[in-house]
Length: 598
Image (tube, rainbow, N blue to C red; front, side, top):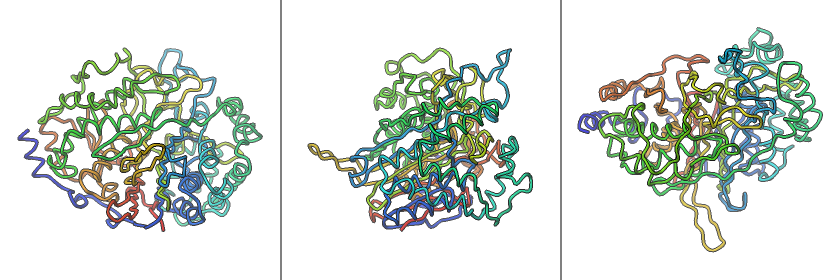
């Protein structure tokens, strides 16, 4: 361990402040006493704060932000996609004092089949699962957001959707960064998308007001009767559009869609309670397994935040938990998964014993500890999730917390805008395994549990997570512990590693949530066996030290739609355990979002 630890001590950084050598937009975090909203778009954040000020709870505000993002951030915010919502009560009144997890992930249409994206020779047809009519799963966002409002909100759908309707009808001022994003080639695939978002090639510019009257009318109809989207005239319009544009979503598919209220996963780390996402998210169980492995280390003794010693140890935990992800996880309605075994501290200890303190364990040689897990499937398959997703976090004055991750998959989803309703459809079918053994662009390994089947939900990496002090139970009385963190991020396969690193940076290394959001990122996912760094990881000496002990490394350095150069967009909240103040961590990697509260 001498070589590694000497490098770690020499390169220890970020123990009390941000890493030198990388840009950040806000070294002073936003704080508030009562309530907080953080999202990738300032107009969406303002919509959430508006609802909180009008007496709404955290769920009301989360629903308002979700619909607002469908207007102001159509690259990932949506009503034509899906997502996950994690709700944790603070006062004990919301959700009867229990954490709730809403799964409104998209579903494969009834006509879907395992080989639907293969040609006559059994080869994957390029772009068929990512663009155009056959790329879309049945959207769940409208069902999920309206379910949340009906069951856990306070103000009613019309009230919480009012900001989104106003933004669509009256328009909003385009920021420069997002005006450039609307140049996406994905929006050239369909005439309606090209017309609405690109003005038929006369591209919108920063400072212009962008109005969406068709979407405004659709949102008004949803606010009046959300069932219309799945079972009424709007469902007829969607099905007719799909039939006319080589799609596969039928009115029967829409009518059959249902929100799943699932039991959140729960674990502990450094004496804190970690409530996180169950399958079909892979992220929650991978996060818990990673933290269980790391619980046996005193990370600060290995060096500061982003030091060689910490990166090595955390990476080896990632490598092992991602190996299990690939072999075992899928849609819980179709697969039985060994979640208890993966979360078992004894299993984590057995994995920990295989970690070499001085060098990496090559993924090809890694052997799972015997006696804990069932035999994995014999055949593995590759699959992925796009990094173009979005996260937002809300805490209200009663301490209720909501973490939401939602997506269309790629930027602007399938590129298909439903006429005349004005919203984009997802390309979420690409998250399934298109063909056993064929690697995708991310190289992420999954098992056949994620094969395409009618009515199935694709495996996801989305990891909305809430960390708190432990709950208290006395007889029939349940008292939630004090909130510490509301976490989540987009980033495809890097989602779970980013959430883990933010959590570790705050809990182990003493960073505040803004510093943790701004910190440069590293990622390992078992295969490909490469330790990746984002473009803001400016400490070349640390990367070189990791190369010297045996890691193959790669640093993202460009920005375009296919190689974004950075991953993730942490829009997170911390409650200071000493002062009780809420601290907003808006990720500096995107310029048009913000944290705000009162």
